[in-house]
Image 1: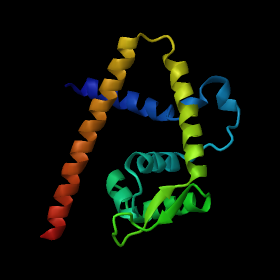
Image 2 (image 1 turned 30 degrees about the vertical axis):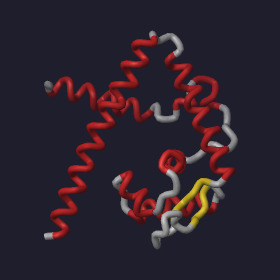
Image 3 (image 1 turned 90 degrees about the vertical axis):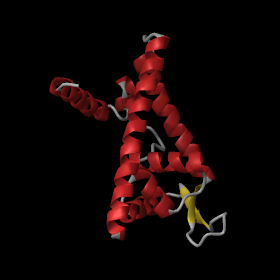
Image 4 (image 1 turned 30 degrees about the horizontal axis):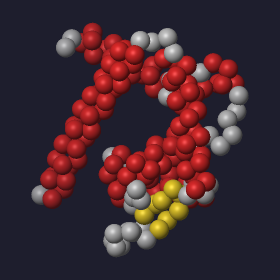
Length: 161
């Protein structure tokens, strides 16, 4: 890979970050969407939905964030009634977060808003190109996850010395 290729990828990633709220494309960008979630709430709740109830520590590990950051984000979600704290279903000491029925409704509403935006962006794409994009993004995310696991393992080893 060349510096030019890496530079182009960096620029495209920055642009992609600007388009994170794809539901806001076109006319929808100017219209308020009732019940829209904060980005951090959407991401955390999506993880809880996929994994089941999770503790602050588990969420921090999953995203490579400080527990204080996760604590602030989950506190806001608790105040909004999006999640609730429950005893660990597996009998552990740490309480876990579970999505409330209201939270689940808002999560699904927000996801539908985002996917409608994606559908608008991709409406004139060929199916093969859509599959290739999904595969490429998945491959990229798997590479990032693999490197982050290695980095966390090295940090844990260094902390134990």
